[in-house]
Amino acid sequence: MNVISPWLHLGYIIPHLYTDMDAYQFYRVAPDGMMLVTTGLNLKEYSLAAVESELPALWRAFDLLKNKNVDRIALSGVPVASALGRKKMLEILAEASQRTGIPCDTDLEAHIATLQHFGVTKLALATRWPDAVNTALSNYLKEAGIEVVSLRARGRNLDQNKVSSPLADHELALELGSQALRDAPDAQALLLPGGLWYAIYAVPLLEAEFGKPVLLNILSTTWAALYAAPQPLQQKPDPRWGKVLSSV
Image (tube, rainbow, N blue to C red; front, top):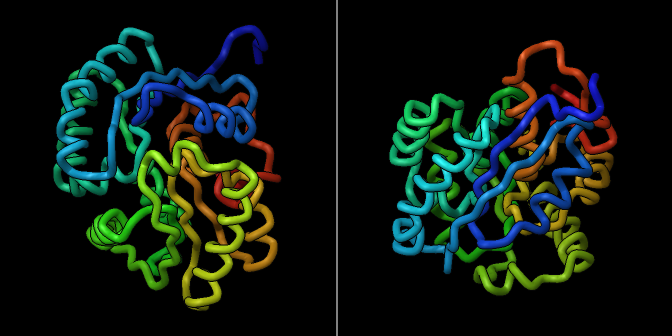
């Protein structure tokens, strides 16, 4: 591998005007030589109206990343896809792929692909979102043949999630994730969605306790990019970050 030349460029559209936790966690779990190229929207809240108001900016973001010659584009923000619904989201991705000539994805579709890779049909879900977002997400997953069999949530709005403490969020991931898995022994995996959720260090702890894959946005989206990359990979992820990236 040529260490001065990144070998895989992932374009990432963040729902916010800044990038912090997404990049911080990405560069811990991604293998050397994988680069994150970000641009942002300005999502104001978790609602369909707020998402629809950002669609013009979304198309500009796709065009910007096309001009950066990335290998793949992913839209972050599970609430964005959930609010739009799976039919509309897949239509947008198909049009974006045609428009840019680049494979386009979302965190949520990457979660679905990862869950299907593991053969998961029954899912434990833990979130920091209000009921409306959790319901929309559960309905989206149901369309993909994945049933949410347990849900634990600490409902917060977007502004609250932007200023949450990393240490408190780590502890919350352990608390809610453990509860969700204990509530449903038949769950085959745990999903902890949310790009702003600092949960990467909770993953190996939860997997060690329950023996089931734990999915985060950055894990599933990185997995999808690596899984679709030309083989063989120039470098694989560190297996300490859990079952998702270890399965590449």
